[in-house]
Length: 493
Image 1 (cartoon, helix red, strand yellow):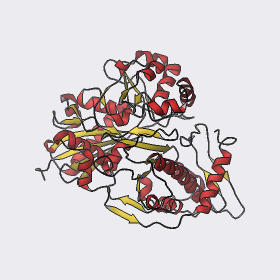
Image 2: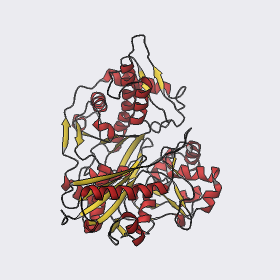
Image 3: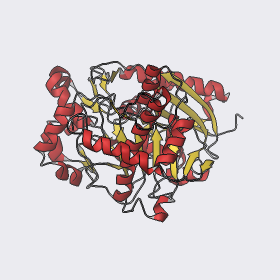
Image 4: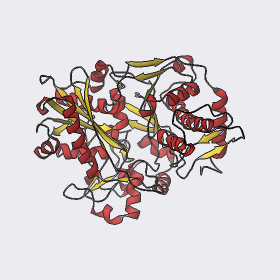
């Protein structure tokens, strides 16, 4: 066992850190260490102390190494994939000036709308960045900070994304990658760098920002002595630029220039996310036209309300999450945290179609249906942005890869299968974000394309394959009809 060469892929998400110890040759997952985060806030606020992420990283790495029973000297590289969009502001010593504003903090919705108007509307933004400002993106959060915590904004000598913050702690180098940078709102996917016009609009000095590495697999430095002591790893091992969590999941699935292109993925987690690696740069205002970690593009749509929102409905009903039935006449849009896609930041949950014979199980099923229809509508938009007709037989027959915690739940899988009418693949690799980060780390340590490496590991194709079933168009039309009619008067659209 001690002769193995391994890398560590880190998934620093909203709720926790996972550190996967991966065989650098075979891709075998040898161990996963875990440590929780703390998220605070109410009424739209969502914040975390970045120092908690750093401590969780150390705890997760230690737990992973212990579980693997491998010596630390076996590790040759490390990379971090982090939750996207969060805003971290640093002082001169590299310490956070305040808690980070997280991606699902919706307080910056007014700033997002003002930024959209100030730069000429949605089309002008997508032409430059691929995305229209919404409450989640970092640019909106920076403007919110300037208006609501100006002392912190003025004192900042560094502005980072969550994964940037952790990578800098590892290597002592301020670096990011095109994938995560493309979610800030100040990175131009059209030209491949920070956009000076947008930085001027934001009042953001480019000197505060990290350098953008060519890809997420680029070696941006080596593990410092201080970081090595904190993590119990050898000093000098390769540190990759890393990337955002969605970009890393794409790498782990073998999506990219050296792998699968225009093959859709649906992630069922705290948020519902659909994405595909493509050579086509999206300019659809309904999508986030991100860059990928490997030099391609990653058009993506994200809904705020997915597994946690449905679990909350189950809790209110006193039901287990799997104690469910199709919704019948009931429609429940579980927009408990506002919504991002469609852009309804002030929305709340909406229930209609309730009858005397409606059961609690049907209400829970309606919550699943509302969340699933919302993200599957975004999937159709995504496929069109890739130049595909979502209803064409060959496109409809293309498997939809399901990942995230919800992909392990019977009700989620059957609801998506019923409402999409598509065949499903549930990959065997359970920690795809961490696996993708491990591929970035292995490439930084030994060279090669990370997508090609992950493809050779086989995580994207192994697993459960589920045949398509006839699409439930009646439920689809009932839910979409309510959503379309309710958006303006009831959901704040």
